[in-house]
Amino acid sequence: MKFATVTDNGARIGYVELAGLEPVRLFIHGLGSSALAYFTSIAADPLLFGSRSLLVDLLGFGISDRPQDYDYTIDRQAESLARLLDSLRLSNVDVIAHSMGGSIAVALAASRPDLVGRLVLCEPSLKPTSRLRVEAYTEQAFIEEGFATALASVGDIWPATMRIADPVAMYRSEHSLGKNMPVDLCERLLGLTMPRLIIVGARTPEPHCLNQIRAAGLPIVTIADAGHNMMLDNHAAFVAALQDFFGQD
Image 1 (cartoon, rainbow, N blue to C red):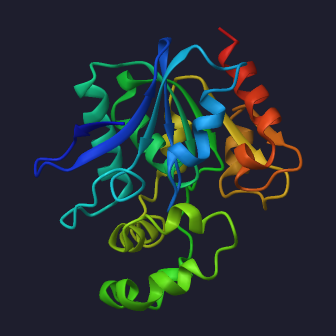
Image 2: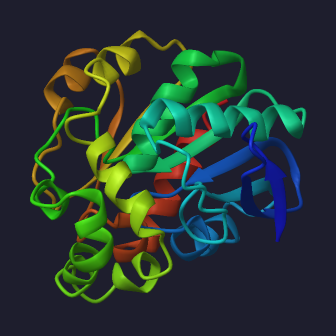
């Protein structure tokens, strides 16, 4: 594990680095998750292995710090990732991002296009949506009651990483995908110029903005026999999609 300070108050992002060649690959997880849990087997797959890879846990999640004075908004998390990449003197990295991580990756690519060479978004959250897990609670009530309720209601896989997430980070991050989400993330995505790929699971309802993305001519790959966690549901097809995209150059 490695750590890098990414806020003025000293909060550190934790990550695991797999040695290899450039371009560097940056893996970003979704809400209540961890890149180590969701992407390690992808980064280490023989068909993709060989590139230097950073499996990064966002602030508030996984092995990263949990600053209580941090707002956990999409743009702030993107700024923290930019600080990480700047501290490592990296640019033009290949970004693979899932769900909320996709929102953050779009914000990163739009604000610092020098940092992102190619962008893979796995069912990104690009439009504000209702966040029922937090909307009924104040932040303090969510910490005391709502977080445990959420843990008990999200299936078998998600709790494994959600239970090590900070409740404050969960609450504020949920709102960053709802009432506090930037309204123009889809427009930001369509305004980018680097190569982009959208990956969706065949069992998932069509994500918001997909029609706009399709109309803009961006490539979309549907992973068969997979839902929102397509990298876990169909590892081989997910790896093949990445291999095909990254092999185009």
